[in-house]
Length: 350
Image (cartoon, rainbow, N blue to C red; front, side, top):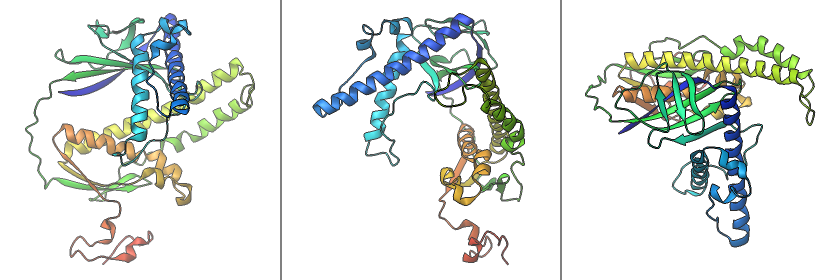
């Protein structure tokens, strides 16, 4: 069995919009209440107690108005956060769970499909518990044998709503045999996403820089409106302008994602083996290197993730070379190591 999620754009009515906002708020409220009780229980007994959303419904009756499965998934998320914090087998440990902020936390919730409570109907609606039919753009129709497992409703910073539907299906065995001679190597480049072993550059687009002037102008207008300063009441004009700023940010993100999907799909279709260097992109975006904005604008980390699952779907290979392996200093003809190539001003050896 395999799982695949498809994300659809939806257009809720005014009533559904209010219900979505209520569910987002209730999920955040329950998460904070459970986390608070766990912390207080640990201070009193030395152990983290088990808590469930049901214990808060008498004190907060409005929790009964929203989907109970959404609240149950919040409980599972909090349990997973604690497991990731104290799991010694994990190489990279997460920090202790933090309280969710109404201003900064992601507006989303997940509900499960129980006997058809989540369904795609008439190829233009998605049915959800407590919500009903939500108008959607069904740009991709799933196979009739696919089973809906869950749906995640989210609202982006620009106000648009999306529903990501998770499907379960029988995975067909891929019999394609990869040709290991049909290989290519990709080296990260801050000014072009990557440079391949044939000397081709990935992309010349810098979407953030291309929209920088328009974004700066919109942010300057926002800074002059009532509500920009801390603890200041936000005016309607401020909220409208904030949506415009968020819309520009979202447009930049969509441009970048679209470009990365196209490039990664083209490489996955053309080559059977792709070799890349495993880099710590967060460290490379450090201000000390002087290319942080270019690194973040590239989206190289997302590009590698896309490349990995697309090659895997095609029964092909992604080879990750350790970042400390001196691949740029070794002659590809005789294998001699040239330490002077550490100097970025020297790019060729004889």
